[in-house]
Length: 120
Length: 107
Figure 1 (spheres, rainbow over the protein chains, first blue to last red):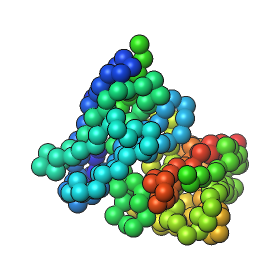
Figure 2 (cartoon, rainbow over the protein chains, first blue to last red; figure 1 turned 90 degrees about the vertical axis):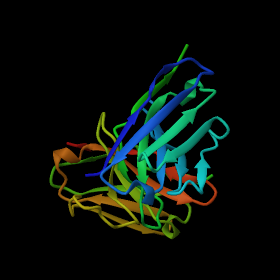
Figure 3 (tube, each protein chain N blue to C red; figure 1 turned 60 degrees about the vertical axis):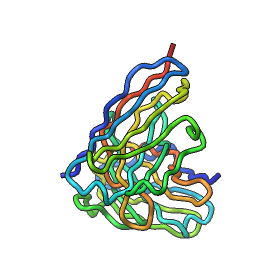
């Protein structure tokens, strides 16, 4: 059974930093691209960042470029998101999502999410 | 940037058919994916690559895509189908794009 479990969320002040983790199990982690998607309270889904299976390709949404860094450790079956210079508008539930193996660039499994609150 | 537009809400009686549209410029040339999200839960993929269903998703869920509109169709709607639904595509200039979301209410 595919499982994705996020951790690391919490309350942080504006300008602060946080590191999110996603522990994967039930599949060959090193064969899949991985992603972070967020959802602000009461709002829709917003893609944040993607990383290819071997970390060769990394992409960011313009809203987080230069502040967030995605990484992965295939030996530990883990995905990370380092978030710096956090702003109030970064407040959201952050989901870890596995990339589809088809050519369509979607997300086939999602974790339960971890809440990040940026507030003074 | 690429924009996907969905109706904010769709209401349907149990046993009837719900159709949720997703509008985008020449969306027919892209692969569209659909997600179901129930309150307090993570999204679940219900249709991928326009019309394919992941294992475990009922045949009642189907998708189509042509021209400027993609459609998710839920046949024989059940109370458990009440949720928010999002379409999503990948665009070369905008990367991953989600639709605005549609709340499906079962009357």
